[in-house]
Image (cartoon, rainbow, N blue to C red):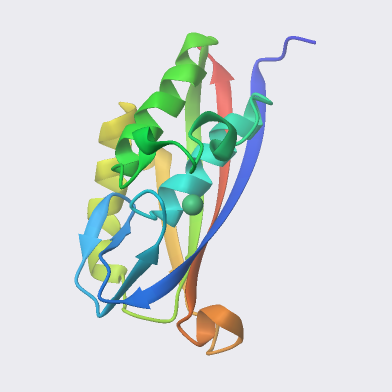
Length: 161
Ligand code: MG
């Protein structure tokens, strides 16, 4: 059935390790730890890509950008987001809004949130107010609380353009 609206959700997690770069929402963040990943490990963008793909039942990010491919080794996830959003546009849809929740214990990312929103909006060519990013700690509980990993959830609404 063709429908004007489609909803999607996405989730991603990456392990943290000392001495690696931390990139979240397309923004480099100074920190002692960064994400262990085939790409740049940007969980915000990966969760967002999965939500966009999920909204149109197009599979998942691992299907389109396999971590076994040299093409995607160390890739800037903003490129993956642009390519994912192109798939959305090609099917006649546009983003209404995305709401993303980042879970991490440290560092504080509030100073970077506006830059992340602007970056993601620019990559997709959508208004900044279509992209929401929120962050929370997990009160030192679980692997995120022990600073072993970082997680992100994303929800999106697409509308036929
Ligand atoms: Mg990932």
